[in-house]
Length: 133
Image 1 (spheres, one colour):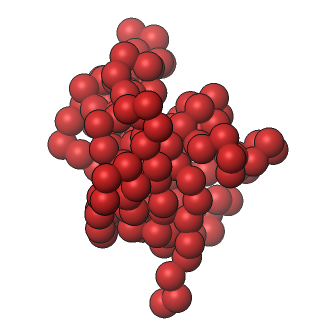
Image 2: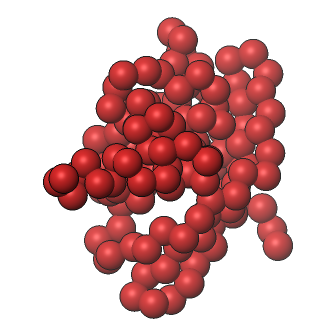
């Protein structure tokens, strides 16, 4: 079994109880569109764990997507994702989450409230804010 095949049969990095290919893998591969903003956010987290720059750009609202590289240059060890809130109002949604990771052995925590918008039946990440502790 190739390294990629092994990655696809492991539990999904987003924290669901499903295997990657039955969860975020269907969105990242383009087989299906994420049905909710939360599903898109989870798939984007999984894309970060795989350094999938193309998927991150493809799912970012073109009006706010940076042209520079999105993923870290340093090897990142993603430790987990906690979704705290998902709220949808028509074609707009927010997802609050905490992602934990390590870079060069140093632990980091990203707490973000992300905004999403739906165009032509597909969700896109717009931007995020960082709540005060």
